[in-house]
Amino acid sequence: DAGITQSPRHKVTETGTPVTLRCHQTENHRYMYWYRQDPGHGLRLIHYSYGVKDTDKGEVSDGYSVSRSKTEDFLLTLESATSSQTSVYFCAISAPGGEQYFGPGTRLTVT
Amino acid sequence: QKEVEQNSGPLSVPEGAIASLNCTYSDRGSQSFFWYRQYSGKSPELIMSIYSNGDKEDGRFTAQLNKASQYVSLLIRDSQPSDSATYLCAVNSGTYKYIFGTGTRLKVLA
Image 1: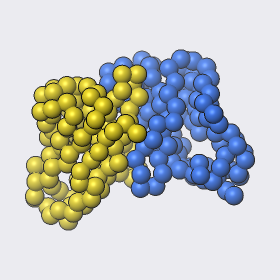
Image 2 (image 1 turned 45 degrees about the horizontal axis):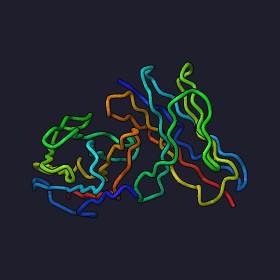
Image 3 (image 1 turned 90 degrees about the vertical axis):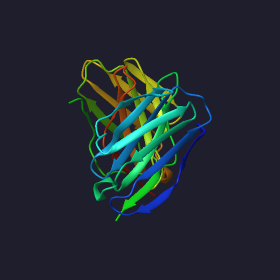
Image 4 (image 1 turned 90 degrees about the horizontal axis):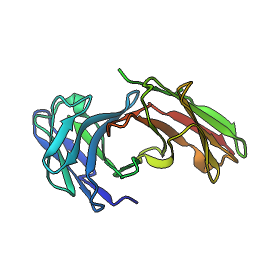
C-alpha cells in the first residue's frame, strides 16, 4: 500500500458546476499524477506534478486544472464540468525506482 | 504519437495453465516497463517491473522484455481463478510520463 487516498470516492454533479478532487499521499514522493480511465481508452494522463507548485499538462488536460501547494496533496479541478468528463479518476505517485502506485479512484458522474 | 498496444481479449485459459499476455510499444527510447493487474471496479496494482532485456521472475509471474522487437510479455504460471482481471502494460521513456495500453482481460476457468 503506497499510502495514497482520494476524496471523494464517488460524486454526482451537474453540468456547469466546478468540481475538485483531492489526492493525498503519505510517502513524500515528488511526482504525482492524475489519470482518467474510460472504456476503450485505458488510462490517460491529465496532469502531473514534479514538485510543489510545479505541474505540467498531459494528453487530455483541456477542461482541467491542478494545484499542488504541499508535497502530500495534489488537487484536480474541473472548472465547469461537462458530461464528457464523466469518468473514473485515478491519482498516482511515482516511486524513485520508477514504479507508479495508484490511489483507489474517484467515480465522477456529470449529469 | 507514442503507443502501447495490447490485445483486449478476453483471453480464456483453464485453471492451472500458463497465461501469456503480450504488449508492443512504439517508442524505441522506452526504458522502463510495467505490468499492472486491475480487478473490476478497483485501481491498478503493480505486479512486475522490468528494465533490461530478458526474463524476470517473481513467484508465478515472469516478465519478458525484447527491446529489439519492442515487445514485453507477462507469463502467469499455474493460473488461478483469482488471476481473472484486466492486465495493463505501461511504458516509460524516462520522462516521468507513462503510456498505458488499454489492457487485456484474462479469464481463468475453474
